[in-house]
Length: 358
Image (cartoon, rainbow, N blue to C red; front, side, top):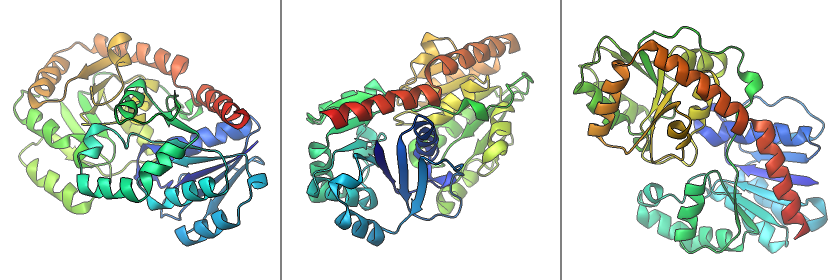
């Protein structure tokens, strides 16, 4: 079985899919699926180890269009489109329809209400030009959570949807957190308006931090990052530490007693799984599908507002260290049971076979 994965970027700074897609492809290749990842060049791409079943190809949008025009149905069994809205990935969706090659789209949270409300006229134009037909004519859609699948259905799409979460490569987790009591919270994600950092800073400003510190790690638009830094200039406990990659990322996560992701909208939130994997409890919002935090008692899952953030932060800073230790242990168990990339790859491989045989 040969599958093309089309993704606009696998750069470390490009967000969750740029990491989760290559990791899943690596595991799919280990299962014997012939995988070719096609993407654009970038300054800091995710490292992909060599595997006889895994090929990484860099192509411009013009070169991708040429590839699509020369593609035959006998060349590939399935095309997996990673993300929507980006013209780069939609080029191959067009050629898949033209050549009658089955294709699946992972919408990656880009049909969530908060996303659609941003630049709505631009979204409507994109829908009219290419995105609506790409979704309607797809053989299958992939959602990473039931909440995402439900929101797609509310838009009226009848395309079959399968819900498979993102996973993390547990072999990357070299050590678990042991140094509880650092009195540190960490935000680690893209620095973007949808991440709710402004609300987090406002909540932090109105509470008694009790000597706790907040580190904000990530990359984003330089002018927006600078605006956030200026707004936090009066908060001595808050530091912006820039993007963290590789082992530095894991060290950053382990240094925290609590990970915080106050996002407006997230189809998954890979950093939540990464934090839980090393034993760090997580505070996030109902804009993510992480109800598991409450169910498995390994974090806090709240409605996003300054008041709710303030109340939860105050609860956290007044909690005993033993509570973080117990939450951390429950979190590592949850990730091993439910979010291991190997299990995710097996589910995706089964879905590929189902689509091809239909």
